[in-house]
Length: 194
Image 1 (cartoon, rainbow, N blue to C red):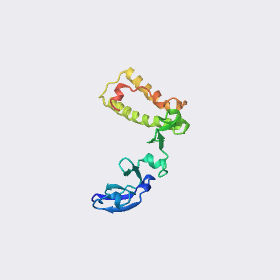
Image 2 (image 1 turned 180 degrees about the vertical axis):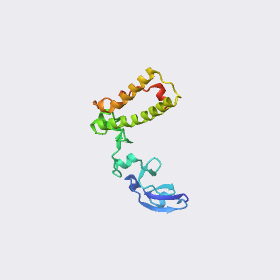
Image 3 (image 1 turned 120 degrees about the vertical axis):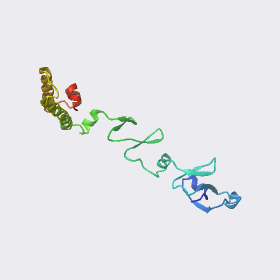
Image 4 (image 1 turned 90 degrees about the horizontal axis):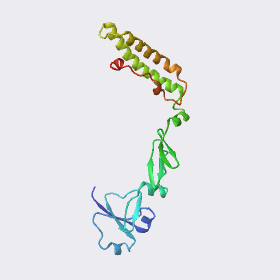
């Protein structure tokens, strides 16, 4: 597509409306006389759908999203907010609006929304326990094969670690404490297999 000379009504352009007088491949000589001073010129391939008149240049440009909002040519989406004259999008799942500002949600917010419950935390611990037990299983096999010589203290530490993981989901009762803070400390020898 080639550049076009689009002549539109100046008065309508001031209102944000495109009222086209003429479209031409070449500029009109003596535009003011031809259109009786009622037109402004826009040069481009296509006329923007939503326009804003620029009096200092006697032309138009594409309207900004904020200008469209001001003229009721668009609405704010559910995840948008007007801050200091600018439209700002936010993630309603992880962010919230406090006193007109976007803030990250806290653990308490997720608890109030029911996204974090005792059951979701216990399920998270069970999934992590499964990963840890896979590593423990590899460790146990290495001990049985004789690849690793386990000391009595090492065996006690491993059994205590395993038991702590087994009991963790059942003993978790305070939802305000992230369950990750209660995870047993991973033994270095088992971390090698994780």
